Image (tube, rainbow, N blue to C red):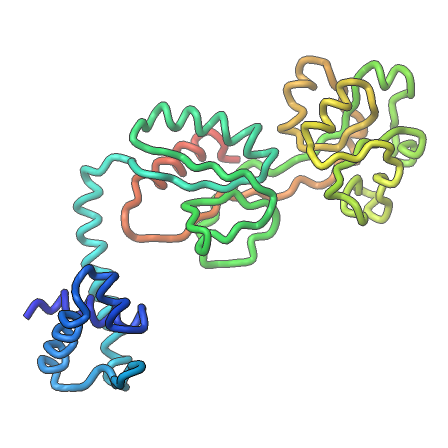
Length: 293
C-alpha cells in the first residue's frame, strides 16, 4: 500500500467534493481513487467517508485524519522543495500588481533590470489602482498603498508614497507663487477625476477644504495632468515619483511644501510560504535592495 498516495487521494476527494473531480486532479480513474480510499480505510480500520450515490461527507474519524494528512503531506512537500531549492534557479512566470503611477515610474524600470539579471523569469506586471485579490487572482506579490487590514500576509515596507504640488515656471510668473492654501482660490488647480466628491487637494493643516473645486481642467490620467501642467495650464498635485524628473530639470517648480498631504505607507505584500520560491524570493530581495526605506 502506498500510504502517501492514498492520503493524497483522500485529501483530493475532500477538497474537490467528488471521486470524479479528485481523479481529474490526480490524473487517475475514479475507480483507482475509490481503491485508494478503500485501502486507507482497511489499513486504519475505520470509515473515513460516508458515501451515497450523490455525495460523500467526512466521518468524525475522517475529520481527525484529514488534519493529520494535511500536516504530513505539507512536511513532505517542504522537504522535497528544500532539496530542490538548493539547485533551483529563479524561473517561470512572476505575476505582480502595483498602482498605475508608481508602477509605471518606479517598478517598471526595476523590473527591466530584474529581467536582465534573471533571464529565465517572465514577469506579468499588472498596473491597476483597484485593490486586486492576491489569492483569487493568483498574484505572486502586490504593491499595496495605505492600510493593509490583514495579518496573514508578509508585508515589506517600501518608501512612502509622497505627493508634490508644482507648476510650470511660466504659469507662476503669470499668476504668482502661492504661499498658503487659501491662495489656491486664485489659481487653476488641475484635478484627477478620481478625486471628485472631496477626495483630492486636501492639504496638511486644511483637511476640511477640498481645493479641487477650483479646477478648470479635470482628467482621469495623472500623466495627462502632468503634461497640461508642463504646458502652463495650472498647479498640479500628483505623486512625487511622477514629477521628479520634471522638477529636477526645472520644467516644474514645487510650491506649498509645508502643506503637502501626509505620505501614504507603501508595502510589497505576498503570502507566507515555508517552501522555497526562487522566483519570488529573488524578486523581493532585488526590489528591497533598491527601494528599502
